[in-house]
Structures are given as C-alpha cells and as structure tokens.
Image 1 (cartoon, rainbow, N blue to C red):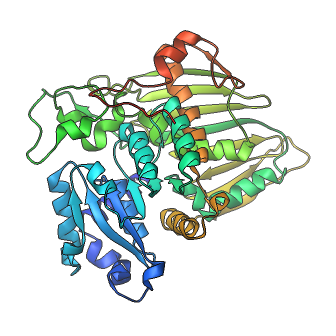
Image 2: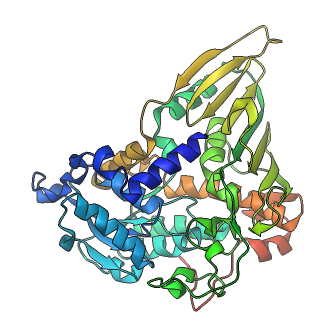
Image 3: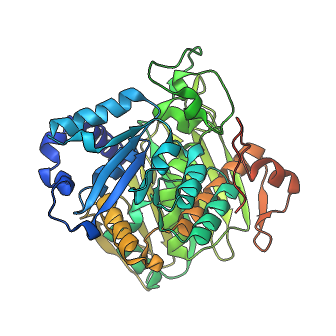
Amino acid sequence: MSSRKKFLLQSSALLGGGLLASAVDNQVFAIFNNRIMPSDQLNVGVIGVNGMGWADATSAIKIPGVNLVAICDIDKSVIQNRLNELTKKNIDISRIKIYSDYRKLLEQKDIDIVIIGTPDHWHALMMIEAVQAGKDVYVEKPVGNSIIECRTMVAAQQRYNKVVQGGQWQRSQQHFKDAVSFVHSGQLGNIRTVKVWCYQGWMRPQPVVPDSAPPEGVDYKQWLGPATTRPFNSSRFHFHFRWFWDYAGGLMTDWGVHLLDYALIGMKADTPKSIDGLGGKFAYPELAEETPDTLTTMYEFDNFNLIWDSAMGIDNGSYGRDHGIAFIGNNGTLVLNRGGWEVIEEKQSKSKVSSPLKKSVDNGLNKHWENFVSVVKSRKMEELNCSIQAGAHVATVAQMGNISFRSQQKLHWDKAKAKFTDQAINDKYLLKPYHNGYHLPKI
C-alpha cells in the first residue's frame, strides 16, 4: 500500500472517530483548559472540515493556547460528525460556533486564525476576504486555482500584512530539508534532469451517474460559489471535486504542488521557459473525470529539464516508489519522497557519491502548524516555511502544466511580462471565469 494511501486511510479513521479516542491524546484538547494566559491564546475558525481542513484543525489544537472556536461547512452531516467526535472527548461544544456561510465566520471578532480547507475553487476568495477581515490564514494547497488567483492572493497578503501559510507541510519536515541541503552541497555534481513522479494506484474517479438532488443538509449553491452552475452530481462532490476543471486541477495540482515544490527548491528555480504537457484519460476513460489520469509534462529551464510524470491506477513508479523526486547528477542521483531519501551512485563517475536511506522521523503537518503559530505570534514573516509567495510560485508552475495539456500546445513563458507568449492562451487560461455574481477582487 502506498504511503499516500496509508496516510489518507489513517486520516480518515482519525477524522471519522475510529482512532480519535486512542490515537489522539487528551492533551490535543488542552485548549479548553485555562493553563495558558489569555494574552497567549489564539482562536481558530475552520472553513471546510470534511478532509484536510479538519486534519489541520487537529494539528493546530495540539499547540497549547490554540483554541477551536468556530466551524463552517456547507454539509450539516459533516459538521455533526465533527461535533460528535468532540463530544466523545468530553469537550464542551457549546463553546464552538457553527456556520454554513463562511462570511458569517469571518465576522466573528474573536477569531485570530482562519483555516481554509474547502475545494480549490474557493481558496482565493476566502483567503482574500479573511485577510481583509483582519485574520491570519492557513490555506490548503494548491493556494490558488489559477495563475491570476495566485498573483492576487500574494497582493492581498502584502496589502493587509497578515500571516498566510500555504498547506505544503512537507516544507516543515526535516528529512526534506536535509535532502535539499545535500543537493545544494554540490556533491551530486552537475544536475541536468530532475524527475518528479506521482503514481497513485488507489485513486479512482467515481462512475458516471445521473444528476440528482443534493443530499439533505447540503447547501449546494454555497458549495458551487464562483464555479459554473451545474446540477448536483454525486461523482463531482466531496473528495472527487479534484477531477473537474471547474473546481481543481487533478493530480498536477493535488500532489504536484507538494512534489514539484521540492524540485524547484532543490534547483533554486523560478519559472520555466517552456512547458509541454501530454496525457489523457487512459486508465479510466469510462469514469467521471475531466482531468487526465495520465500526464507527462516537460518543463524547460535554463540549465536543466524538469519532468512531471503522473498516473492513476498504477503504483509502480520510478526507483520502486509510487511518488518522489529524483535529482539526477553526474556523480549520483538523490531520490526523495515522504518516506525518506537516499543517494544512488553513478558508476561512470570518478567522483562517486552515495548515501543509505535516511527515513522520515517527524510529523510534517504538526511541524508546519508549529511554524505557522510561532510566526503568528512573532510576526516575523520571513520565518514562514510556506509563505503565500512560495505557495503561489509552485501552484503557478503546476497550472502551467495543466494549461499546456488543456490547450494541446507547447507553451512559452515570458518571465518579464509574467504571462505566456501566446495572448490567446492568456485570455483563455490565466484566470478561470467567476460565476453566480462572484468576482475576484482587484488588489
């Protein structure tokens, strides 16, 4: 079983209550004690608690003095599940305010931090409105659902000077940092190619089913928000939103922003000169999905090539791993993923270099939250492990790959003008259209 699948299965059990009593110590909910001085308390409100939003909240409240005071979700059954979990831990849920409209949560004066764990198409609007409301923000990845959204989110953070952390928690995991330090040491020699792959055999879209009425207790109009108005379809809802262009960008933006991120960090790379993406629905052509289940994208940089390779329905990725990043140098190849990193020697090199597997030893999500809370308190923005600028950078690169695939063209990027050289591509793809009376603010 892949490490990603294990992580999600464990998270699902945890979030569903199956592991909550045994796996999460009572200290997780020490927030409801009065051991922390009021001046050191931070109150958190969560928008979207069906998946990573709740995982984020669980990590947040492990930190002494961080209090969960508000929950917002468009699905009443999801909210009830979360309240039931808290009740089983003898938590006084009367202290937690419940919302279905995120705007009401943003009006709550005592909230210091807002977690955004919604589908991707909501991230930009909610983050911008949250900082306008004076809140610090933890926004799930990918931070934006288009290149213009990413750009506008950065502008909003700069204008309102709030702390905004992107949810790329691998940036806080020690073995990732150690691996990048090795890459930067120069021991690998000249690195000409970086391979990034994501093979997820367990990921499978839903069957094609007829449209239907939304489930009872679901505010579907609010879920759609700025996306195109369509009848409710269960195969596009909850976890499976990520396979449709209206709301997300498939594996490229789901996993890609994690893995491409470290490829870019390792190579100290900005934006590519050209992008060429090829793929399609090769694994599950009969299932409900718009994004490609198989995609290979070539990114051209000045001194190296970056290759993205993703596939659903297959686990046999490069180097015997279902996901990873390989920095291929003249002296050796460093292979890195969530499990650890190692260096494989290049037999043809006189300057041979190798290193045994160094396994992961910490919890990246918990570390990411510790980093975020420390910066919320210190206001030292430069200490954030994943600023909105960093999150926007890799989300932009991931969007480039999707745009090349969707347009079926090799694209060229004008770094000085921050747009593609083909104006027709810019007009069609830089910003996904907003609907239903919603508009992306001009910052």
